Image (cartoon, rainbow over all chains, first blue to last red; front, side, top):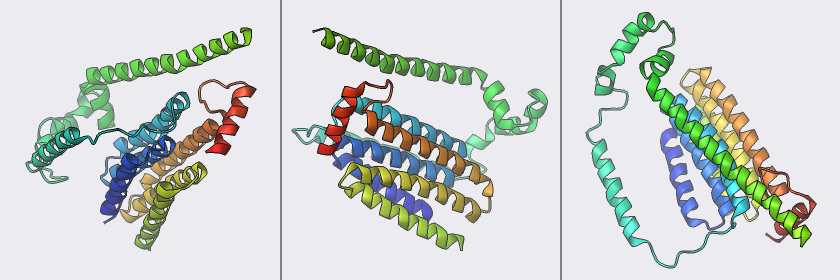
Length: 183
Length: 102
């Protein structure tokens, strides 16, 4: 029941994001969208995903969008033509994805393929093979160690890029002011 | 009892959403986002008690922290029109002029 209400709020927020032209309000609404989807993730028992969604979606990206807004315009330009082709492409993709969910096992089904492949081995042997009491930690740090290393590298690279972008503009603006004062 | 609380929180969330969609000034929207975040924290807490797993309160605490940081960032944006570097006095007065127009 609460799922349905939250999903309705999510759809309303998405529609409002598309309709509004005032970009500051759109940034606020994307923050609310992230909070709502994080709440949905909590209801679906995906607590770690909800953590990430709340920290990245509602926290960091709102701040980043505000930083971008400070450098650009505050109103969205109204597009001249109606985007019919993108709408059709999105509809077809959505229909294909919905068709794909028909074959999915029921939510929380213990006989689903994802629970029968390597999960039993993790549960039974990770204590002796890795020696860490927490199974999730041993999966992330040992069984999928290279995967985690790659993820950390990606996040590190993204962080460096953002720092360069934001720090670069600040320096340039300061230089502009100096030249203004000289001239 | 928790069900009634959850229903009440959902209704207040809806009211905050209305203010967020309609809100004439920016300050209405900032306040709406802030209270919406608080409602999310409360909803997660109530949900934890509804599903008889109050450990979820930790997540609610994290959400409260994130909500606070976001509000600080938005207000800093209002004050200085920038987030990275603190601009000089000229920029600040410009920001105030622009805000009073919008």
